[in-house]
Length: 343
Ligand SMILES: *[C@@H]1O[C@H](CO)[C@@H](O)[C@H](O)[C@H]1NC(C)=O
Ligand SMILES: *[C@@H]1O[C@H](CO)[C@@H](O)[C@H](O)[C@H]1NC(C)=O
Ligand SMILES: *[C@@H]1O[C@H](CO)[C@@H](O)[C@H](O)[C@H]1NC(C)=O
Ligand SMILES: *[C@@H]1O[C@H](CO)[C@@H](O)[C@H](O)[C@H]1NC(C)=O
Ligand SMILES: *[C@@H]1O[C@H](CO)[C@@H](O)[C@H](O)[C@H]1NC(C)=O
Ligand SMILES: CC(=O)N[C@H]1CO[C@H](CO)[C@@H](O)[C@@H]1O
Image 1 (cartoon, helix red, strand yellow):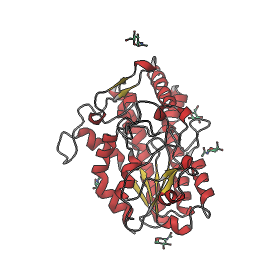
Image 2 (cartoon, protein in one colour):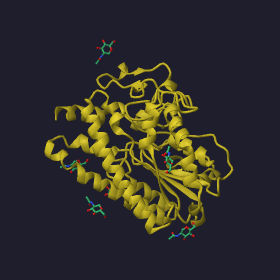
Image 3 (tube, protein in one colour):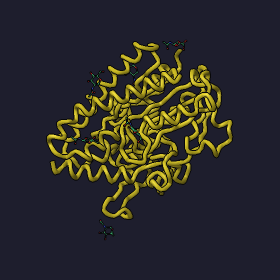
Image 4 (tube, helix red, strand yellow):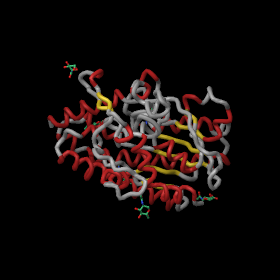
């Protein structure tokens, strides 16, 4: 269990280190199949700038060096999943909840992001809004900022990237506690179900939720034996993803068949990791499991930055680079447009 203890120390520090921003982005403005707003809930895999600058991480150098050239609150060197999904749907980047009162009101028409740093469906850090709290903020805007017809032409992106699990592991090191993991996975997926159903009931008729990535390969686990990575991927992640599939099937049978869609990050991440050049338009990552920004937890100033973030899949111990996300969305683009733009 010593392994776990040091692993957790590492994870915990990375989490504390990691968080959010302000973002502006590109994109065309023709609505795609009538869907013209994106609402975003969840964590740092989708957060484009809600954390406070005092939360650190995403608001500090070298975050944002590729885009926009300075920290923007994204947990990456540049664009992240939200940017690429918005681009695919031809929706402008939704404004962050944090900036909603500072931007021109016309910006609100593209939707809003409530996602916040290292949050989970349950509490991770005391003053971070869990997903329930994020949906509460969304609900408060209904009827005044967003009308029912706004919502019915919207897409929601709901990210549960694994912070509940990293947090659980950080707090439960002993064997008996770890044996409680299976029921915790059920708790997380059941709470995810409650959240997804609530977003639908509030009026969003197209909801996308990524599967858990093969977390055992994130650089946080790099120095751990293969067995640990296997346990994480083949037990934790596999259980979560199979329960999530059941929940989404159940929700789709209760509501509209195609209202809920899983974005298959698990297989897509593996496809990109294993790519040796056979996927057109996607350069192979030579060392996909090595982070570009290697954070030295003992002495932060000793952290090292790779020469070219575009050659790395992972930006830091947890988050992909812009190039990483771009590759993922290239592989996924046909399935995503098919799933999110059909009636
Ligand atoms: C979410 O956070 C709120 C406020 O801290 C808390 O009352 C609530 O129990 C949390 N919800 C879940 C599902 O953990
Ligand atoms: C999760 O939900 C399922 C189906 O509703 C239920 O059978 C199970 O007991 C729940 N799990 C937990 C840990 O509450
Ligand atoms: C299914 O979607 C259609 C079109 O978006 C809508 O008119 C209908 O009310 C939805 N049905 C349910 C059960 O939500
Ligand atoms: C940080 O780097 C300096 C200079 O290379 C080195 O002397 C020091 O031991 C490093 N600190 C840690 C904690 O590795
Ligand atoms: C796209 O969907 C098809 C049909 O469900 C599936 O076989 C394929 O693996 C998916 N591709 C990706 C990249 O998810
Ligand atoms: C058995 C046990 O102590 N479980 C704890 C593990 O960590 C979570 C929070 O992440 C607690 O809620 C559990 O009680």
